[in-house]
Image 1 (cartoon, rainbow, N blue to C red):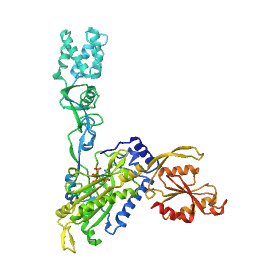
Image 2: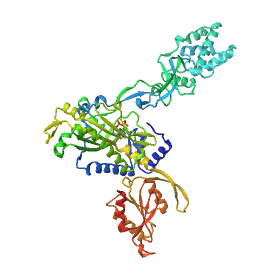
Image 3: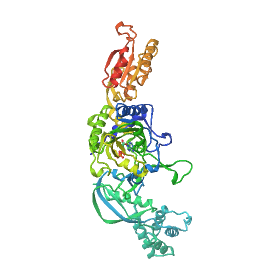
Image 4: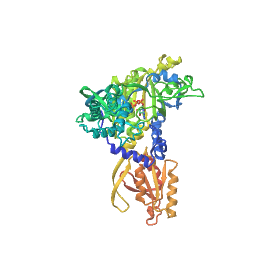
Length: 602
Ligand code: ATP
């Protein structure tokens, strides 16, 4: 199922991310590297807050999970055993006109009329015919054609002279190749009937169909309902032009068919796509100085495999009993055919994965358990339940070894898309590695004295996708009073305080009043060991609030003359605490500030 898309909202989000230093295109000054992104000063904070919270909830707050941090460079044997070398591919198709590559299963389904073309032939006169035309156009008054430089673009000019001089009753064609072909064929016939030299016959025979170039490739075009055949013809001509014809006359194959829900045509131009072929998504590299098959390694396409491969080592050192899990956060690499939707589908990204090992009979129950835990997690980082959806992946779409998989999806502005997969992977991975390595990966149950390969449930989340979901969820616009009390548009990010890059901004009301500045700096130093704070003394207070709103800082503290106790002594050492979303302000004692903020951040 998909949701309506909101392109405008997404454009605003991408622009805010760049403007305020959340996310930049990688290698931007060199034109950008497709599928790679760099996180700026605020983006890195947001990302760290997410990873730290995941680690806290998934590892530190549990007795049954330990962490690890595996290498990115991976031995090919690992990925052979896991099935990635053979099977980690997406079906790829190319547009036969532009060469643009698509993932076959992601092409939107389209309906319309298909126009098929059997082949195309050249309507522009070939060199021999051009030479003949040049001779025929030559007069005593104009003998100066340089016959070695005539190109097909001169052909119509030459023909015009001939038609005018010989007063032939034939009208000059417009630009389309069919009319041009008809014109030159007709001209050849007329000239042949009244020869004055050998050039009339020479032209007619050189322009005959067998003498002209033919492109034998068949091609077809889909045009949408209500669109005309001329659109298909134009696309087909472009196709044959790419194959070397200057003025292709396209030869249709009747009849035109109606197609429904097809994925065989480029959605951008209607051109036919090549048949799908598998494209392995792994990045291959060579380790060491030799560049041959013996030095091949891969950049890991998921963090999970190093967990499986280290299962035995970790089991021994962690002294855990089933069920227990191993968690990892780290980079993964996939040479995606179409990186798109900002950071959503990148070629380099981070994953947060837990492999939770269990007895076979616990698998299905733990799948349900982890699905619920993970939904709770997303709510706890500020994603609203209304925007989160659970997809129970049907049998035919699940990996063959999985007995159950849920996709946790999120309503992004570009549609409903996967945020995390929670999969019951049975004992597939450990069995494969045991078989391929010849090393036992069995678990010995002290109580039952059984030896078996544990099953595993895997919640696998994407850091970058979750960061993007948090930004999309947070993006908001409303009206707020400016320094003069007039209402104006405000853009702000409603991050959950737990995730916000900066937790609290601290302002002295005036930058040139030393006691205010000193007090504000004291507060900064008081809070700094506990949270990321930002001190700002430049510009009007309203402007400073607005800058913080736009980057999602949930709290601002202002030190004013009341803080100094100048007007009312009972307000001494109190500050204004302003909340981002409601813009409400309250008076808080400096001594209560840290506790209050920690409580509200969570
Ligand atoms: P998709 O179907 O979107 O390609 P997937 O089902 O192949 O994703 P998994 O192999 O289950 O993804 O990976 C687990 C998680 O890793 C995904 O839910 C997603 O959050 C993240 N992820 C996978 N591929 C990418 C990518 N190209 N860019 C960013 N994150 C990704």
